[in-house]
Length: 229
Length: 312
Image (cartoon, rainbow over all chains, first blue to last red; front, side, top):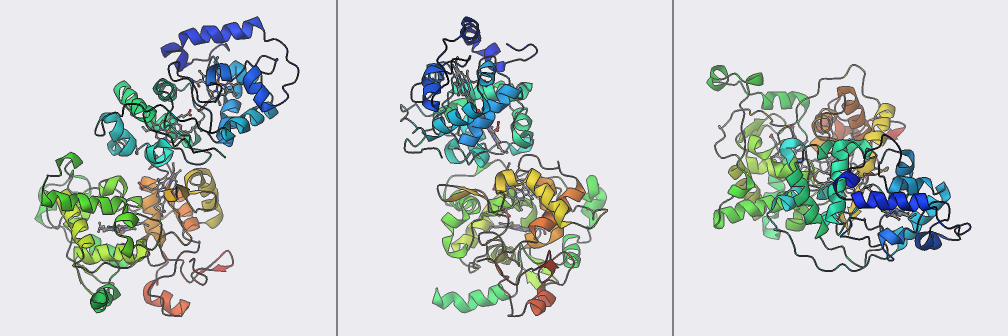
């Protein structure tokens, strides 16, 4: 774990994971030769320190809600590649993902991003919908303009389905993941957002706001047919 | 519809809401000699503070239903007033937070200022006429007849929001706050640099916005789906004022005054739909309706004669 980095996710929810991540790194990954393809990288790792992505992000790239591992399937390729770059270069801190991203070559990062982007989004189990007039729904669909917070939907698209290469989907991402990212922006451990949009607006949110809005988006259905570019 | 046509033509011929006030006109109209009120309570700039009621206070029943309809039209204009909209915009795109946000020309601050005499069309304009102009120019569509439910609903929504506000008094947060003229004349190249850094992320590298499932999430700034050459936003001072206070979305106030003018100039030096008052002659149309340094219509910028090849 690089000295001096803080990882909100680790501190708050994923302590055990940091340990796991550390163990994976320390044990040294069995050499697999050059990862032949992005798919092999995702399922087997690259033998140079990058573990199989699917062990955490799921065989279908759907993530793991309980552990707070984000879905990668169907996200925009350019967005995913840049996140890996940002982990490697440090503007996005994560005790788990930074060493993994650093173990990937630039070409591997692009290839694996492209691989996940074209994976179909698996159908999500129906989640109980949070109240339509609750704090989470209000922030998501109306915002809090008195503090310059637009509705999340205005940038992340209706229902949080995502818009283009710059605005990732929130719909169906694990609530724990959404929460950890909002806190990471508040604390400055994630500071790779264009125009500092997320750093800026997350500061207006209380812990209760964050929990409510994270739950609201986690429960939004993502059309299973939606396939990334 | 046919039956209504003559009235519609009459009503729309003379108006220019949301639109075409020249700077002098704007000054004359927006700064009525503030009477006793200003003298007795002098908050900043002699203006009164006002906060609209929360949305949760919209009452049940037929009146509340009309308020809600107005709100829906304001938010999803194309869906709820399709006959009168000719582009990809919605009222809320330029009047943020459902028309509630101060410094974003909020409806609660506008409502009590009408009827208003406007030098431009030389008659007293009702609030309904003002709304009609927004459809014709900002929405590049057709003006709904004054007796149309669309106008009634928008009026009712505005009236509800303005309840308790003083009549005929300029309120704090009204309009878009004027940005003083910059030290250097607005410049296309500098504006382009601002655009690429601070706007293209959302509005697209080509200014055409971004859609999800066929609907704009980020509205277009020029081109066939944007406001037309008759809209107020095509004037540099109004665009600079809107942008400085409200853009980039969630970061209003972060551009310098110079940057706001530069990027307004860049945006307004692109083609958009023709002014519906176009006479068939660009220079004559400019002279009749755009005779102000704030309009680039009919001017040559970067080798392009603006208004000569309007977007459609």
